[in-house]
Length: 136
Image (cartoon, rainbow, N blue to C red; front, side, top):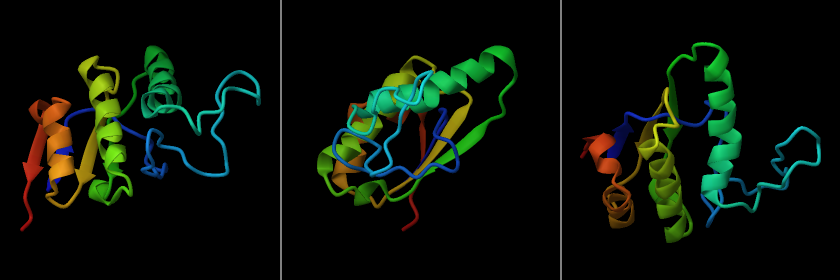
């Protein structure tokens, strides 16, 4: 299943790792704040990572200038090692999409047609914003 969501997304140069409740899972810790010792987001919930690393900077930019539409690609969502990671990613996206906070980002999500991904789209109410393209 390949899905195209009419919603906002992650910066094009960001690689997202699917791991349990967080997007960031690397030795290089993501920090935010006015100083270098901002909060460590590597173990934060996916929704907090999305808000601090994507949404808040996006909102700051769009308050002062027009921001072009961006396409964010999340490839192979079905390949998350943990089943919970798939629903965590989709839940985080759904939470901010429902509030309109991801605009002007759009997501292109690829996955094989596996039940955990399909269920995740239906349970998070993302289907209403999704166009599906079956390639097989």
